[in-house]
Every structure is written in C-alpha cells, then in structure tokens.
Image (tube, rainbow, N blue to C red; front, side, top):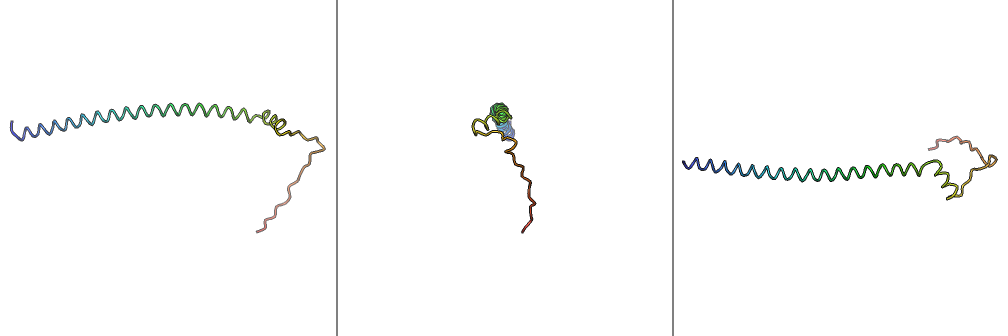
Length: 97
C-alpha cells in the first residue's frame, strides 16, 4: 500500500470516528432535551389544573349569595326601605377647556 493510500485511509478513519462521536453527542442532547420537555409538559399540566381550580374558587366567591352575605354580615349593609331610596338624575356636563 502506498503512502498516499495509507494517508487517505487514515483520513477516512478519522472522519468516521468524528462522525460517530457527533452522532453519539447529538443523540445524548436529543434525549436530554426530551426529558426537559417532558418535565415542562408536566409543569404546564399542573398549572392548568391549578388555574381551573382557581377559576372555580373565583366563581364560588363571586356568586350573588356570597356577595350579599358578605355585605350583610361583614359590612353590616342592609337593603334600604323604599322611602329611603333617592334617585339622582345626572347633570349636564359642560365641556370647558
């Protein structure tokens, strides 16, 4: 075998080794990123569940009965008698600049 052929085989062997190392590195990186993606998907799912629970809690706190109970008990508010109700008519707004 001539020197040129040996050099060519050596270059091809080095290229093959470099390619194999590149494939292994790329496969490892893909696996690491997939594991990270799975973790993030789990976090997203947990946050969506929590969001749904918070929306349910908000709707429970905002019901008419709950607001009325808080007004009566917590703020000691009462519904005024008809003779205590005053209707205020809006006044005309002048545009003074």
